[in-house]
Length: 292
Image: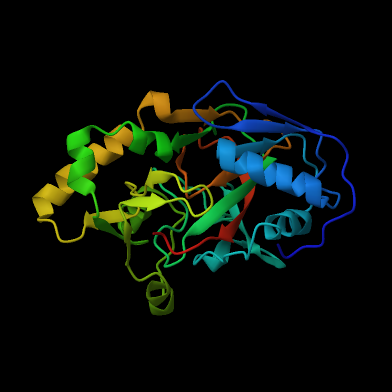
C-alpha cells in the first residue's frame, strides 16, 4: 500500500450481484482518503467477488491513481500515445476521434483477455472509471476463471496439468490494426518491451490459493511443448469453456461507475457500441506477481 490512509471513512455497503461474480459498493466516496478498516473490507470483497463496482464516483484522475496505489505499484501501458496528459499512469479508453486522430484506445477489450498477461509480472487488477458513456451498448463482460477451472471436464484438466503457455502482446495486433484506426505501428523499443513470456496454463491465486485458468484468445499463442495442432485444439476448448454463460457477469455501465477487477481471477471483453456513440473511460492498472 503506497498511499496514505485516513483515520476514518463513512459507512458503506457491499451488495453482491445475482451473477457468478461481482458486487457493487455503495456509499464509499473515493474522492476522500480511505481508512484502513475500509480498505481491508474492500480488499476482502475484491478477493471474494473478483469485480467491485463503486457507484457514483466523482473523482479526478489523480484520485483514481491514489486509490489504485493502495493496492500496489501501477503499470504503464506500452501504447504511451494514449496516456492521459499529465497522468502517464492513466490509459485513455475511448472511441472518440478528434481532428482525424484517436483520442484513446478505442478497440480495447475486443478479444477476451486478462490485462497484461503478456508481461513477466501481469496485472493484479485494473480500475476503469466512466467519463462518457454511450446511449446504447458499451457493456463489459467478465468471465470467472476460477469457475472455469472448477468445471473443466476431467480429461481436459488432465491434458493441461503442469503445462505452460506462451503469451504475446502481438498475438492479435495485426488483426486489430486491420479492423480499426486505433493501433499505431510499434517501434522496435515498444516491441522489445513486450517480448513473449510463458505462464502456467493454470495459475494459483497468490492471496486465496484458488486455481484459475490463465489463457486467453487475445494474448495466448500456444501451449509450450505440445504439437501445434494439439495446442490449438486444447486452447480452443479452453477458450470456449471459459466463456460459458454460467461463468459470466455482464456489466451495464452507469454514470460515475468505477469498476475494479482482479486479473488473476477473470478475463474480460468489451461488448462494443455503435461508432457514432461516444465512449471514454480512464484505466489504471496495478502490477501483480509472477504467476505460479
